[in-house]
Length: 128
Image 1 (cartoon, rainbow, N blue to C red):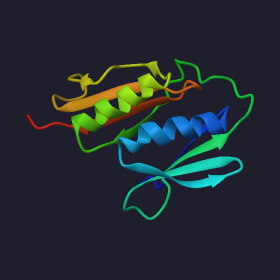
Image 2 (cartoon, rainbow, N blue to C red; image 1 turned 90 degrees about the vertical axis):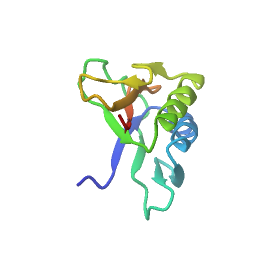
Image 3 (tube, rainbow, N blue to C red; image 1 turned 180 degrees about the vertical axis):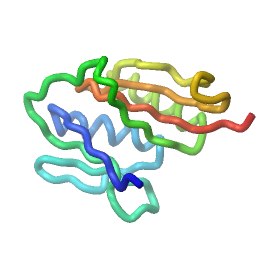
Image 4 (cartoon, rainbow, N blue to C red; image 1 turned 90 degrees about the horizontal axis):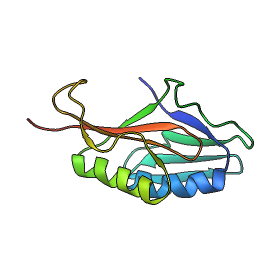
């Protein structure tokens, strides 16, 4: 089982503000703020699970890197809220909310790229 994940960001302050707003749609809150890292955890969970690590001057993550992080949520509405908040704040669209039947018939997801090119997916499984 995975306990937590971390991603590098070139501007910790800007990325923390971005993720604070978009992750709120998934019931995450900012829990830890340190000089070189910020941690977000789901409400009701004991610790931060999603971390941002300052990497000033890092190159953007290439679109063809093949790496992405997927966060599961409770509803299609939460997927949409995450995506809409991300678009409003300047993320790059990498797949609007919708069914991804090539994964399964009830796989409902959206994909964004943050300011550094990190690909973040949010998924739920809808009732058929």
